[in-house]
Image 1: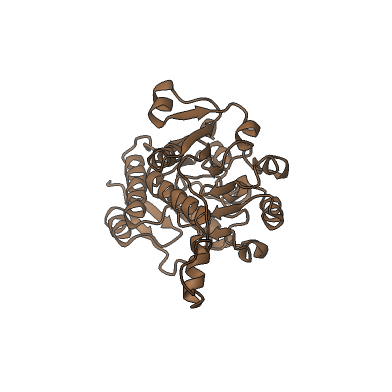
Image 2: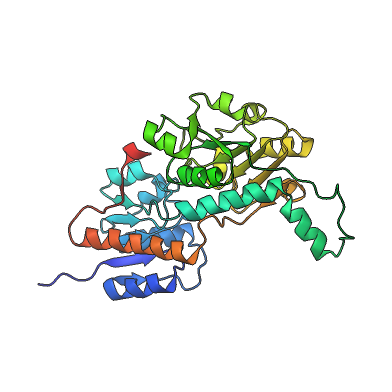
Length: 328
């Protein structure tokens, strides 16, 4: 007897070409409203689906996985980060987890550079001044920002995205420094003209711009805590296009307000979309609504990776982007 099509539940709205292809390949339930699913709705979906396609807005923890039915065999995450999924518990229950790595590296690196320039050159202040019709003409001392050429850029996390940031920083004439769990191969270091720092404390104290490009894991939670933030030079700026939980947001806000850090460009926040209201009032802070990977091309490529992972699993093989606990 012929085997029926896989039952797939998608938790958020995906680009139209991706949803159309899913309809062709699988018995799929789509979320036309694009509203995040409630915990009860997620639990129900995990009981009736063969495959769940969640995003970072879905917290799939141990308690939720305990409610999953025996039918669920694959969580094909739409996104590279999987800190919202309890991968270890999923594997213990016989549920595979896949992700979409490598797709958004260039897009996110573009946004990191955009934030560096925006903060150093005070672009939002200039935009607000023009929008309010407050510009009265050019002046030699008006809206003075800081040059980025020749400045030291510290990259925390030299994976795909970190290296993409390094390539762009080189083109802008910045000096690239980085901290990783271990140094890169010497050939890759040479390619990026990058200097490795074994001590994060020592690197943080010496750079002019600090770019956060590491994932959120238990070991990176509040890696930039109050003590470490105080090591930064008062004229330095911090950029985060990775995960908000890596920075102690309250400590960062206090230091920005006190002038102990010159500025910040943040695309992610510690508590998701609940942004610290004190951050909104600071002229030296640029806030974006998690736009790092938000390109049409990138989001379609992410969907294509999800499709490949599900189709490979359906064909009886290991998904190419399988996530295992040892990777985290």
